[in-house]
Amino acid sequence: MQLSAQMCRTQEAHQLALASAASLINIRTIALAAAAAWNKEAIHADRREERKTAARLIGLSGDERGFSENPDRGFAHA
Image (cartoon, rainbow, N blue to C red):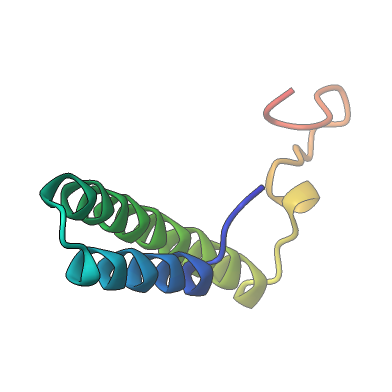
């Protein structure tokens, strides 16, 4: 399952809120680490969404990108 950048940012904000409200250092540390992980995933999701948008703009679907014009070959990645 691929996560959306918006969902990742929501989870990051939730973890940051938990960290700021935590009275115990270990809970704060874990929440900050989780927020950093969600931030990293959001960055990857942004890049993934940009690639999908770029592919749509140039009009290539997933099947067309890998198709070889050589009838003996079929798909380039196969």
